[in-house]
Length: 334
Image 1: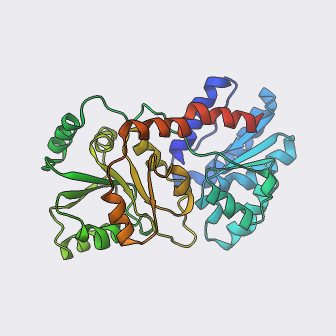
Image 2: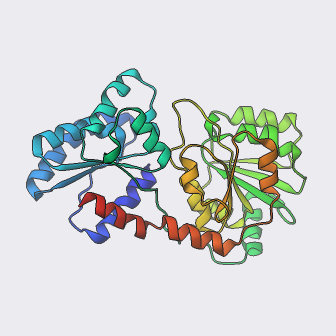
Image 3: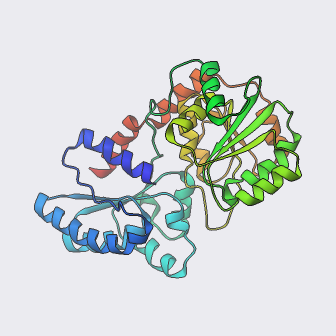
């Protein structure tokens, strides 16, 4: 969501220099203080600059947006990502969906997020589905795959020559499905496949135990948090990007932006065909959807002939370039 908000403002300023940003830059602990301060700051900016359109980047801001709309008459639009509509809290569910429904337009980042909104009483004709975007050049590195893999090998101190690399990036939590993949799929793949996992989270200890139990110490490597340069090397050196997500009630994957980050580098994605991830994949062109929790289908998809790298990049750019998506945002905000 932070990545989304940053790019939305960055690209919108290119087409409208009268764009004003109010952002929480101090983390979750300061959210209550931010919401109090942002309310009055928004009222001031609307009055001072005669602003006619207000955009909210998080469902949590819906109640605040409803009050600002009532006080100023400004056209108010909100973007809903996933967890900000499904968050399992009785008071939150009592207030936020009703507040969202009082606004003028609701942008959902995926069709699954749209379904979650409708389920909670938000009027369907207010909803527009616009996916998250990508800067197609942001993650791409120059050099051959062999050269980049040699750099990665030195950086990680791992022998990657003659290996086929599976990659996952993101938090190690239940819904990401990394534990399931390590426990159920990796033991059944040939030894020339290795699995690199970038990220930290509460499932790490459980995953480490599974690696040991299945004797996968030479095939599965938990890299922890990686810096941006390492992340780019991973995207440009791997053979397949894996998103083995599993359904967890009240904690959906709203879109899956890492899928389009991978795709922008020509890296095909194999993912569970659930929730908002489905909207981040052009099946058969940027990757493949597999049935959630289906070991055999994941293995079959992994062993398919590789998709053409340039086709993956071209298709990702065509569908998810911020330059295109921001024009769709402009239509909604006008």
